[in-house]
Structure formats: structure tokens, C-alpha cells
Image (tube, rainbow, N blue to C red; front, side, top):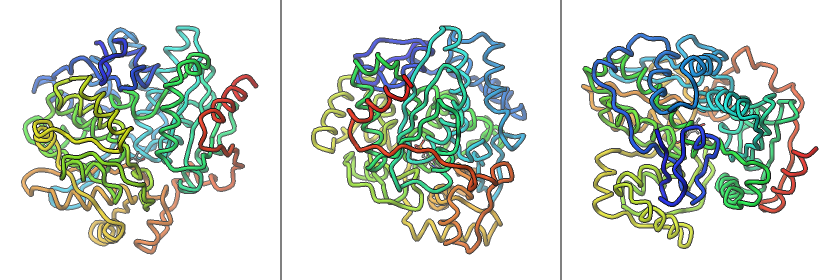
Amino acid sequence: MKYVSTRGKAPILSFEEAMLTGLARDGGLYVPESVPELSKADIAALAGLPYEEVAFRIMRPFIGDTFTESEFADIIARAYSGFGHAARAPLVQTGANQFLLELFHGPTLAFKDFAMQMIGQMFEAALKRRGDRVTIIGATSGDTGSAAIEAFRGLDAVDVFILFPYGRVSEVQRRQMTTPSEDNVHALALDGDFDDCQARVKDAFNHFDFRDRVRLAGVNSINWARVLAQVVYYFTAATALGAPYRKVSFTVPTGNFGDIFAGYIARRMGLPIDKLVIATNRNDILHRTMETGAYTKAGVDPTISPSMDIQVSSNFERVLFDVYDRDGSAVADQMKMLSDTGSFPISQGALGRLRELFESGRASEDETTATIAAMFRNSGEILCPHTAVGAKVALEKADPSVPMVTLATAHPAKFPDAVEAAMGLRPPLPNRMSDLYERPERVTRVTNDLAAIETLIEEKISA
Ligand SMILES: *Cc1c(COP(=O)(O)O)cnc(C)c1O
């Protein structure tokens, strides 16, 4: 399996190279040259298997010869052993044909653990074999960073630097990043918003001299290996609800378009997904794009669902590449227009295809809060605010005859203030992390300046 860049000009890479590289050298994102299709019988055979076994069967065709079968099975076993639920991604029914897919039983209580734990184990195995060492740099609106730090802490071959927007992550998210005491972990609080963090990470990758000197590797959701790990739970959920003999719909609380892009890949692999619904908070660039056909940046407006407070949705480039018939130069032109003018139009043909693939909706702050309260009243389930954005949109889009699964992207205890304000109860942290508030914090404040960030990284890795 080979990987090509969405901008058409970077070298074609193997899975291992694409994983270790992250962002392509032409500024694009790596995607598989083709997507393997499973037969109906292959999909039916997944029903009832342990999560790890499904993960093996879904991901195996994408990894080429990067790992042997037994190495890969061990990687998967290690990645999910720290999860607090035997099903890894359990389904909960909340209404007639309405379900939640609980993706928050990993070590940092958000769905990003599914991908990040896999990446940590895959990096370690690949780097050890190569006798190599890398510097991981990532931007986070809160959950990616804690998941990355948790996945890489204490590994020999990796230093991990996470940029988060100062003052704009929840206390639980911050503490999950600042309390690990391992020397290879570096939490950096940047004076700016998430888009600034993401832009500086991209700038560092595009500064090839620095990139090569510190052997930069990326684990943001632009890393293909992360998308791949997220494809798995669409299969476990849909087969539990009757796929491939029955269609299933999914609503996905979306920011960087990574999780929902994984659903799109699952569908391309043959999973009969009926609707794939984009749910945004009031930072609704994706919903507006679907409605108007123009992808236009606006300022980021902080919300109670901060992990979706994004106006440049990186993984959207991957689906653009497909709806533009894999024309890398067309995508490159649009991305250039976006960075020059803050906007680009989508052609009628491509927009038509996007609308066949996805539906979209949005939830205001009041609607999000009301959904948390209503869900607790009606089903006893406690939603995090991101999940509530999804649940609100899912109700609007649901067709009563098709199961609708909302991805529950984080544990409510990660966002206790918003949940308490909505329903009057403060959700407790699971026992395994109840001392989080007592652990000492370690963080470095940085200005929104590439040179300053690069200097800091070089100082820390040579220390
Ligand atoms: C990251 C995140 C999202 C958005 O996921 P994307 O893959 O970036 O679209 C939604 N909810 C939570 C809790 C998250 O951490």
C-alpha cells in the first residue's frame, strides 16, 4: 500500500514513512493510493469479535509490510490494554434507534486515545527497529495533546512537544498535559488560539532545515495512521447494530474533520453507512461550507466544546482531494487561496459530491446545554458538551427506521463546569485518575513566534 499527498507534489511513501512523517513536504496530507474493499461476508464476520481482532482485520491491509502480523497484533494489544472498558468502544442505547458510541474509556478520557495509543506503540516499534529518534510536535485544543503525552511518555526514542492555547483548555485537559513527570514530555502554553498553535506546527514542518535537524514527526490528526485507527470503531458499532445487512447512520462532533473522515473511509471500505452527519458548534466553518459552497474562515469563538473550536479544518483537505477526482494541483490552488484570502469556492460538481457524502448541522451554546439536560432527564446518560453537540444534530437528522449512532467523544468529567452548569451535577473523574488535581504541574509559556518555539525545542532536546 502506497501513500500519496493531497497536493500531488511530495514523494510517494510507504505506510511507515507516511506515519513517521505526518505532513507531506508539499504541505499536503498523505492518503492511501487506493482503499481496500471488504466483502459483505468479511464485514459480517466481524460481528461479536473482540475489539482488538476487528482492529487487526481493518487496519492490516493499510500497513503493508511495516509490521509482521504478530508484531502488529502485539502493538494493538498494548495500545488498548490501558482502556477502562472491556468492549473498548461500548454502545449505549438512549432512545428508539438512537445510540451513543462511548469512545472515552481510554487513559485520557477522549476518543483520541484510540489513535494515539496505537501511534505510540507503532512509533516505538518502528523507531527501535531503525535505531532512530524523533521529535514529536503537536498542536492541541486540549484532547490531542493529553492523548499524545499519555501515549509517548517515557518512550526512549521520542521527545514530545505539545502546543496548547494558553487559558483555553479545561483544567482537566491542562493537568493531563502538565502533570506527567517524564523528561521526554514538554507541555508548551502558547499565547494565542488553537489555530495559532496549529499554524506554528505547520510552519515548523515547512521549515525543512529545522524539520530535518530535530527529525520532526507529527501526530496531529493530519497523520494518516491516526485516521486509520479511528476507522475501526465504525465497524464494531455498525456490525453490532446489524451491518452489513442493515444500514447504520453516524453523527460525529467535528472540529478537524479527522474522526468523520475515518467514517468516510469505513464507508469506502464497504460498510453500509447511510448518513454521515457533520455536527459543529458555533465555530461552524464545515456546516457553512456544506450550505454555501464556500470555505471561508472566520474568527474562533470560544465555546463550552473547546476541542471543536476550530476554523481551519485540516482533514477536510483529504475529502476535497477525492471530490476533485484526486487532482492535487486543484487542491494546492485552493489551499493557496485559503492562506492568501481566507476563503476558497468549491466547484458545483465537487459540492454536489460532498452533499451526497455528508449532511451537516450545528448546535448553539444554549442548544448544547439543553441537550445535556434533556439527555440526562430522558435516559440517565451524562454527555460531555462535544457529544451533546452531536446528539442535538443527530436528533434533527435521524430517520426513524435507521439506527443513528452519535460518537460520544469525551467523558463528561473532562468538562465538569459545562456539565454542571447544564444539569446541576458535577460528573466525577473515574477512580483511576482521581488524584489528578493533586499532582504538580510543569509547563513552559511561549509566544506565538516560530523562531522562539524552535529555539526552545532545540534547547530542551539537547538538555
Ligand atoms: C478532537 C475532538 C473532537 C473533534 O474531532 P476531529 O477529529 O478533530 O473532528 C470532538 N470531540 C472531542 C472531545 C475531541 O477531543
